[in-house]
Image (cartoon, rainbow, N blue to C red; front, side, top):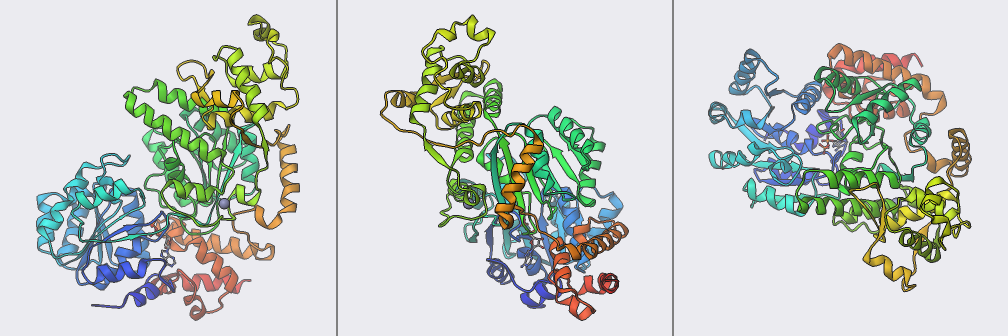
Length: 611
Ligand code: ADP
Ligand code: ZN
């Protein structure tokens, strides 16, 4: 073996310690064993194959389905002084030949290849003539026909095992569920692989789910804590993506739209700016995110409900890969539930599929309305037993108040029943509040016993009650029509008084965003430490922080890579804290390996000297 794992970790990558199971996995693969690695996004999967590739003779072949990601990974490795290259359709024939020659000459430590390229007879022959350290199969869940990332070529990767039985293989994925895991083992013939299953917790992500009164104003409030930070805002429709991006731009943010309907060139450019500039917000449909491994996404905001708990986990998981504090924020209301239900119902999918999607939506609603720790609930959904409460979600930080809502639930359910089980929440709330409207008199709803029966609660409270009853499965949303609510089997028990209902207290909608802001601020003062989740720069260090970021940006531009490929925020923060004055001192900072020290060390020390 060429060099020890610990030495490479420190000298090349500039890290002091392995994380979690990394050390064991590296040892297993470096010794020639197979491994199946399940680790969440940001867990540190890459080192698990990069380091063994450098320890063993020959080149590590990495199968990766995402062209953009290969480029990024190779850029980062080259910056760390590792001999890496990629082969995919973005290279012209001549460039591809050059890489192939490097492979044959044994000049590479790592080679990233797209699966369709790898499977060509020509490439397999090249491999047969080369010295190979290992095969790494990244995003291994792509073998699964049931997942959203299914790639048929992945299923043919067993050829690697057949043709090169003695070369160790390591498969990696951030998809947690047991069926996918079984499918990976079976499809890739990994029966003898050791399995490494990490917790899927993302401790640095703070989850907050709030009722939607005025989505845009609430988003703006949320963003006040995230000025100049990179983040993603998810919306359901293309139209809303564009409107939101425009609106945020008018409010002084750098916000760019991204959805499948945009011109390819525009879309690629917006993505590129998000990756390469500091502090860009991307406003996107779910078309965005796959293959983005920007480490410093500081927040993920949802202006609409995601489709399922899995989607929520995936989408929020794109934040905070670097391990620094990150906010996941979602605002939702009953309107979202109605529109998602309708989308499911009116889709072309077969009945079976619709039922499944409806179940997933219900599970998501349960998650949104829970009064338990969000993290615990989320991980439980993935079959993980999180022992305590996290202290880093809205429910832990501000435990919701609950009340006995049995009587209110009965009133709401009777209002549904008396009006014929076909009206939506807006109308039902008006009836309960005894309001006058043309519709109410037209249908004679002012003659009903429930008319004006709910004056003891505010409009917001009633909206919240209906939303929670839907989430509890006590009301069903009519999906074909216009969001009319109807009773379910379970609601009869409540109407008969045989079941009591605990509800979560709603906060009344602030009138304007300014009032909301004031309310937030007074709350902030009360919980000063707990509130802001993003990392904070001490005021007197702010000029140095900006100078370091400027220097990093200049180097990145000159190298043609995103700034985080030069130094992560975590590295800059440590520099800010330690204030190294010499190259020797800088060498001890996490993320500063020998090559980066040599190339950029003096630039950093120069900046330090000015402060
Ligand atoms: P994944 O592929 O699992 O999403 P990455 O391999 O991209 O995760 O790693 C996530 C981040 O953590 C990267 O920024 C990486 O540099 C950093 N990292 C990984 N391992 C370590 C370690 N042992 N010490 C410090 N940072 C690490
Ligand atoms: Zn919690």
